[in-house]
Length: 178
Image (cartoon, rainbow, N blue to C red; front, side, top):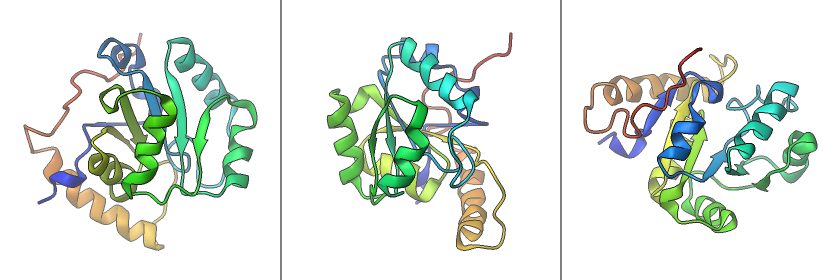
């Protein structure tokens, strides 16, 4: 019942993923959510995130931001980042995800979606036949509609972590500290 919401992997943050291992596994495209995945909701990119994009692109990855935000917010985030983007994506509907793969010019099995929300980012990726990595959200939201969704996400994650067939399907992508 919950499998349609299960990510392929669950990581602490975008920085805890071993992108070299992802590349070795055949992935060539990274589709990122922005808010609460890369930066707190509504925030501009940081020097750390700008450098992160330069690093993953130097490994050979193509990147694309897939956001439900409008173009003004998306372009403000991309001020110092060279990446493709789709704004007003209407996630979790598959159309934006499939357009992203088309823009990246690669088959679906070479792209992975990275986001912080099960019911938009991960569910949309699953509906589109794309691998997905859930990261812990940046920020705290306990009162709003998003806060209530986070409580439901914890419930789904409880069962995900106990599902041997669905848990850690990409196998060993956690970056080891040097």
